[in-house]
Amino acid sequence: MNYFVKPGSVVRQIWGNPDTILFIFAGASAEFALNKAVDWLYFTGKLPADPIGRLFSTVEYARKIVFSEQQNALNAVDQITAIHKKVEANRGMSIPEWAYRDVLYMLIDYSMRSFELLERKLTADEREELFMVFNAVGLRMGITGLPGNYEEWQGSRTYHLTRDLACTEFTQDLYKQYRKHLGAVRYALLKQVQILLVPQEVAKLLPFNSLRILDPLIGAYKIFRFLSLDDIMKKIILPEKYKDQILALKAN
Image (cartoon, rainbow, N blue to C red; front, side):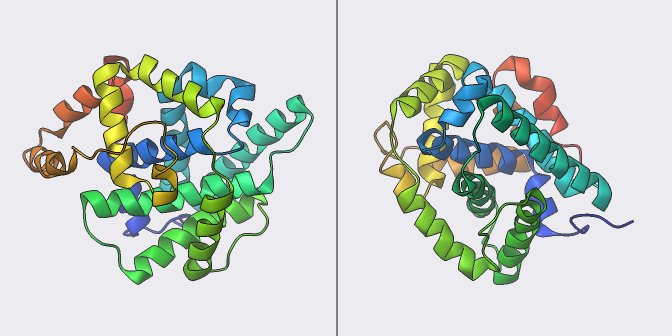
């Protein structure tokens, strides 16, 4: 069978690991809040109304792409494109091309950062492979101005980070929503994971201090995972109402 992402790929390894997925979206949730195009997420109202539910919805689409047969994966990409086009039509304007690139770049960057924090360093070939998979998604969506290889992507990523981020009233409100939906303890954990993961350009704009206290707990988390107690940790980190979605992350 012809898959969009071949079996054995490091991309499947990354997106087949619930721990890595949760860290990817912890990091991305910080950068989403700072992105100058975050008003688009407020136009639909879905993200501020249910940020955790939106996370799992996004994960579902990403995993369909990573683990599906070629045509089914392309259909999932086309469905994402259609959703965005509908939002654009409802608002009567187009989402900026740079904003599409930003989101794609987040998936690439936080996939790497999360895997390397929790597992090991990626090889140069694995980084290139990860880039190529998500670049193919971008090309299918019709996103313009995409780099041709991982090295070009690094330069483009840095450019976008220095140009497209700002701490705005949307940032402040979105963090209020994170705290509301997670509760004080889980919200504090979210911020600590973000501090571990995000690039310097993101960290300096975050609406909280950057004191790191989670570093020693990463080792403890790995021990829990080794002892197959990591489901307990996930239930602590995420609210009970998302228990089924958490367990579903294990299905490849």
